[in-house]
Image 1 (cartoon, helix red, strand yellow):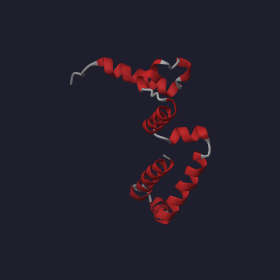
Image 2 (cartoon, rainbow, N blue to C red; image 1 turned 90 degrees about the vertical axis):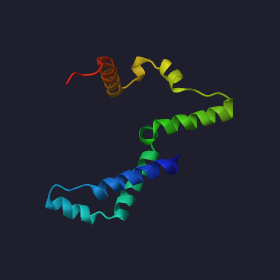
Image 3 (cartoon, rainbow, N blue to C red; image 1 turned 120 degrees about the horizontal axis):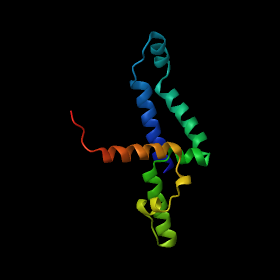
Image 4 (cartoon, helix red, strand yellow; image 1 turned 60 degrees about the vertical axis):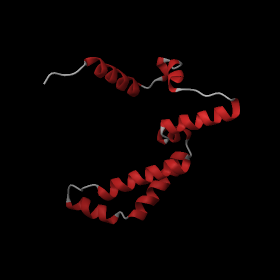
Length: 118
C-alpha cells in the first residue's frame, strides 16, 4: 500500500506543479526553477514524514484501499470480513468529524431536494 500511495501522490503533485498556469512573471520564474527532480524530492520528503505519523498516514491513505487491506487481514487471520454498511451502523455521532457531518447533511439535503426547475 505504501508504494501505491506514494506513487499516486507523486503523480498528482508532479501534474500540479508541471501543468499549472502561473498568474504572473515571478510565478513563471518560480515554476521553471522547480524541475521534476525537485518536485519528486519534496514530495518524497513530505510523504516519509506523513507516513511516519499514524494520524497523517490515515489522512493520505485512500479509504477504499485501507478497508480492502483491513478486510484482507481480517479474513486471513480471523476468517471474517466487514462491510461499509456494518461500519456505518456502528458509528456514534461523536466519532464523526464536524467537517464530515456538514458534508453528509449537505448530501442528504441535496438528495431530498429533487430536480430543480429552470
